[in-house]
Length: 435
Image 1 (cartoon, rainbow, N blue to C red):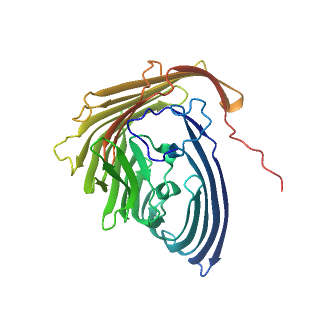
Image 2: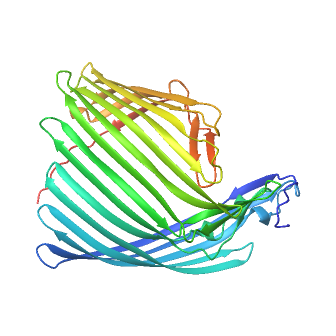
Image 3: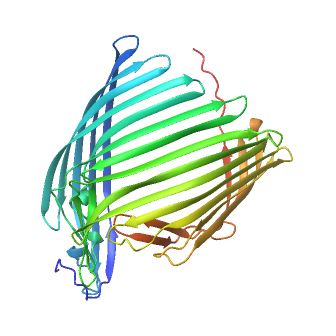
């Protein structure tokens, strides 16, 4: 068969997959106290991943019997990846403070072979995993933590030698056996505090990740609309991402309702080449959330979470296209206990997203679930339920995505309304073994 797909030809494929994979891992850890406060931690890990990918396509347009493999759209590939990782860390622990610093080194060897193209590839990589953390505990109800983690990221076998099985007349994936590692620098932190007597809780957590020499997908689009994809390193560019979540919760006296508010921020910047030009994508989301909760033991529980937010997407190659939108989510739930052993539960998830320049219509969906159950046995350990999921039958699959190279709105088939009978048994008590 000709291995260059013809965009004008009829493509009628019968496809068959028979993949096999195996993972082997061994880990050894050793801790040596150096002083009453300082300890040395050593570790070693050996792992092996083996994959046999057999993805065959039979072109029924050229051969109606379907007994001849079309290698332009087929992959038969074997891959073996060995990793040897060793590392050391020092842990310094006081009554309220803990400091840890360490580094792991991993040697990776990849052997990949393609039976149809007869291409063989052997690559070796050296990975570094430095880490450091600081934790300070003001009290049992107040603490702060800051940590750093670095990690080398190997190109995968699918990035080095993409599956021809994913090709079509207008889509071609090209190999790049010269891909190098990217490297992630990630800083994380959290703070929490609580006042148990007055039911006050507040805190925050964050992450910032910087990726150097990132691996991304390069796209070439021909005048006829044919796409050629190739994974490349973006040398000299750094992708970044972040999130910051904050919360404050307090019980309102008189009505006995626990109420909380939160501010959430997330986003980042990524780069990718399109037709030999570099596209810069900025994406940011801000959201404000309100939470309320009220409960009475063995009587009822009421919960409500509402969130409103705004997403901003900006592409440097398409600066005039506005793909910013408002969104709202509402999540209520109610539990009612009656006749001593019965429980009625209902919950819902409402989602609304505003239309944009790329997406012509607003999207809204309500997924409502409910079940009724009866508890059995001592301490209500066994619960038998009759449930209905998606009562309104609106669970249509939906996802809105912004990537380096495109904005997409994906609608897909998923499980909608269904009924189910089930049972849950909670094992909450174990007999003590006699010594």
